[in-house]
Amino acid sequence: MSFIRPIIYIIDDDNIILWMFQELLRGIGADIRTFTSAQKFLDAYRPSPHECLICDLRMPEIGGLEVQLLPLAFLSH
Image 1 (cartoon, rainbow, N blue to C red):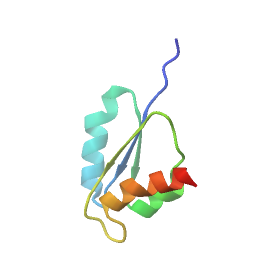
Image 2 (cartoon, helix red, strand yellow):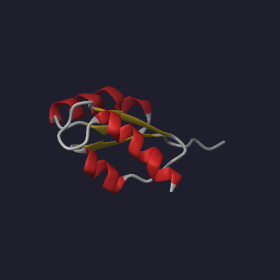
Image 3 (cartoon, helix red, strand yellow):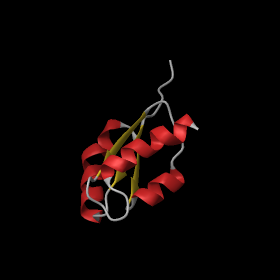
Image 4 (cartoon, rainbow, N blue to C red):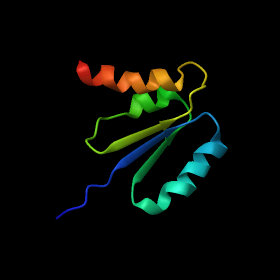
């Protein structure tokens, strides 16, 4: 049986918060990908069957709630 490594996307405009999540989650065996803006995440995002998104709700340009809806719109096209 092979292990599929889950991807955890973390989006926050505060580098300290990104570092904290990386430190907290690095021991679980996931592929942790951090982004300092929603746009950087959206530019890099590729759908995967095993993924999780953690994001700041209040960010410049695109807020966290909107970010969570955008991948769904991306998948429906």
